[in-house]
Image (cartoon, rainbow, N blue to C red; front, side, top):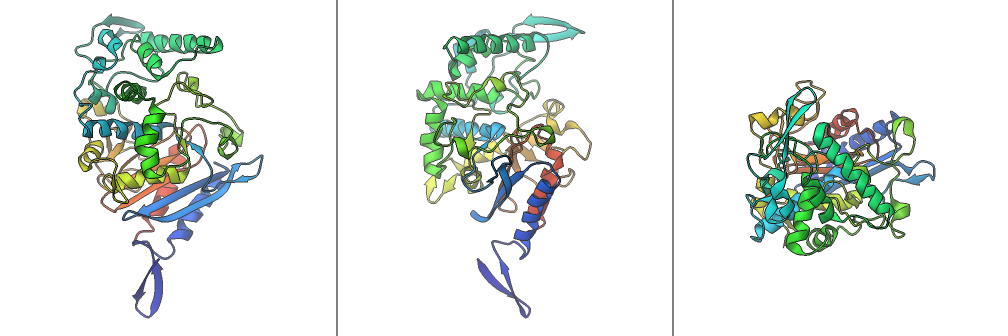
Length: 414
């Protein structure tokens, strides 16, 4: 801690936080728990490249009475996406991947992918796309590949899930590349680049990483992110070594449950996985993810080690969506309760372009993402501030807790 004198009183500050910051942030954690929203949670806050606060409250498993703590492992779900993007950008740094590369250069089946154009109520025309999907489209979620959908696209995804489950029952589980090749047979929702559509784009990027490196996604991340950053518990698998440390997932009414009600993502499994989901598969502690966020906040450098180039991170956090694409992005609603109001999308991250117009405190250029069970990360270059929040609940209802915890952090700045 650093001490400074203000008038006649001795006050304590750490990297520009007010003296009551820890109590304020802890009370926000307790308030979320006391509202009955979740039984336990935690947050790690950093400023100016260093950890400032690491706070945990409540239970990770209410039935067992297990406390949330530094050793608790969380399902990060969509916060996996930023690591997948960072992996792609590492390969861009090394000249292995170009952002304008065609997806079919890596997975040839995508050369024949069609578009299901909606022509009227219940009517679709299957046709060739105006152009092929490129790596850039996958990074920006403008490929036209959704999670779940309706029409021929939704039917195609449901058929994939059915076949995948049947093959698994027969002992023939699918790996990452197999899933990507099957997705290539499903018609896109629109021509690549036309709109934003949250979906499987980053899972497909995971397959691209496997193709160009000859390693599965977990192996690649372990060598290039987990180990260099000291993310000692980060993984894609639940096994006997970490099973009792996994936080319980809770649903409505505080009842334990599994899955997030997404047909294809719920087909992902953590036990002996062969499919490594670049969009949803990561497990880790709050500190594991904080170490990754710290690297981003430090422009790719951690403790003298260059993990990612400064330019790669600048590209990740640059708003990428045009006016038409923004009409299908999360921020389009003008409801002030929409916490994505005032944001654009970069490579795998929301990017604040109009600060102060949503229910969440932020700054121009603040960026990050969230997970389907309630995890949240943000990096604010302007304030040199970054944080990781964790709990495990679905439906996620970000609006019910994000303004509270993020507000406590921002209001604790000097």
